[in-house]
Image (cartoon, rainbow, N blue to C red; front, side):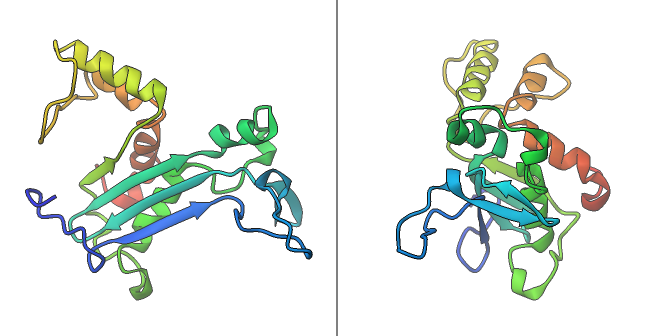
Length: 191
């Protein structure tokens, strides 16, 4: 971050943490209520909590988003309920790209209003990737270059015009970034 002149202190970044459900919810007797038994109301309709969660930081001055945790409703719901989620059971804000855009729009000083550098998004860092499908594609992309591990900073570049770059963008970790840039290109400026 020093080489890119991206400040990472508390005065530089704002961390957003979203959880779809309340891990600390208790009933009137103080008994914990599992997320699988929680629901929320939207448009006067009850919906099940999904357990989805995301944690990321925004540093708008340097144009950076740092993603540390991301588990979408479509990933967490089947673990809680034992079956795939139905479209009508999804929350209205349902994807990481939605959450990232909301965080970027707010900026790293949300008490001051809107991000003053809205068109300045330059970097999206996904930290500690553990998704098996993504890790597998990353290994294959590196192997196509004769490598068995990523290079140290500044790392390895893959162009989305090439097969490896397209495969990486199509992973569970790459898709939200593609959606963010595509769905909000008018809001973010052409990226």
